[in-house]
Length: 595
Image (cartoon, rainbow, N blue to C red; front, side, top):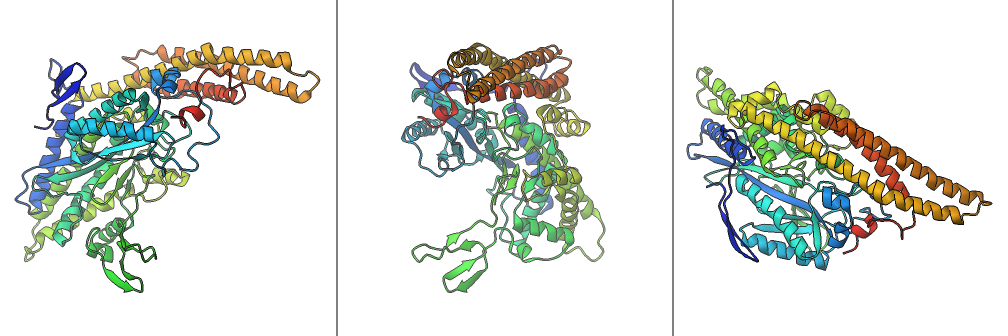
């Protein structure tokens, strides 16, 4: 059974929850669970097929694992209730930057606040009672930002447990008079929140296929599966971008430690050397040792050291283990020792969509490699039957890596140089949600999902339309909320402040008159921007959302989003000059730092 039932106890009794799949009367899936279960099966078949060709006769099934690092913000509930944008949209639509944000990183490296610690301990107890094995809790970089993570589990269960975690976080926060914000970008100018999906494949015999081995045969298997993942990401980078296409991620990707929208793979220096040597057919120390083989020790004056260990030069501190490669936080898809970390997933979304897409594209790549291996093994090698498998594997892996190493990148994903280089390499760069989602029903992607049996053409069309509709409705709500906040709350306060200035300013003082004129100019900017926002919203709402979903989403992403940015700029400028006693909403300096 993929998703066990569970019991939740509340104030009025206990309730049995049964995980369910939803289907239309005509048989199409209406949820994310069904495509996920289908993708698990197709991944298992493809992986077993490859393992059989590699000589594995014991493995009968495979499954993907997922470890989900959930990031979120926690603020005082009083501030939350005093902000219409937080209660209606989950993010602050307005708010000037405080003098101190996350520059010092003192929140990241600091101890958990006592109130937050009590809240997180209660969350953990409730999750443990539900069978969700949380193991990690800590501060994140932005003030009031935190992370909670469970251990690795089978993907279907991990997705269920993450949905439970998000629900429990919000419930327990309310009990502690706090508010948990799961939006990808609740506050501008500081880190957004992700949901890093750590993904790997395991066999029913207990082997992790993403774990480099300590023997040549095990490393051969690892390199085959590594080649499959690289091919999957290269060929289907558009689908991985679609997998993380949410309204909140539009504000996060490519900013404040969130990876860019260009999907590339970070493998680390050592694996990159192995890949290069395979492509060039040259031996190397990295290839001989393997990415996780026992380190080669040398003796120095301070004791035994190695390329996988380090000493800090202090007698009371022991030799410390060191991972073969550091993490690249600017990479959206990074190899981290025995798994791949998909860092671009948004904090508010279900993991099921990224998981079923990732399972599907890797299954497709494994089937391709199996086809190529079968062709190689059928070739006649007179007098060379011994070593025929190794020769076939080498030939196939070498071809695949040569074709798809363009997706490997270990540098700064934020740099302009990388954007230009990625374009030169021919990688997908789908900057916006409408750009990404329009690729969902391309011929390549229709062939992928229908060929694997993960989505039918009708289900694929529904998934695409749903993404457009959700995006348009989200931005429409945000734009209307911003207009109401600025018109009914901020403008009256600004006019009142202007009236007080006009009554008290010394008309003989050029400096004071200039100050009054500056305030008046900012008010006029706000009025102009509000008129532009209203016009943009009317334009977007005029589209027929059934027949013009892409056009409407593009209008919201361009016209409405730009109008909202102008309105925010005017409001935030006024926040910095209007009397603090008059300002109608709690400010960032209060929300982010006062518990």
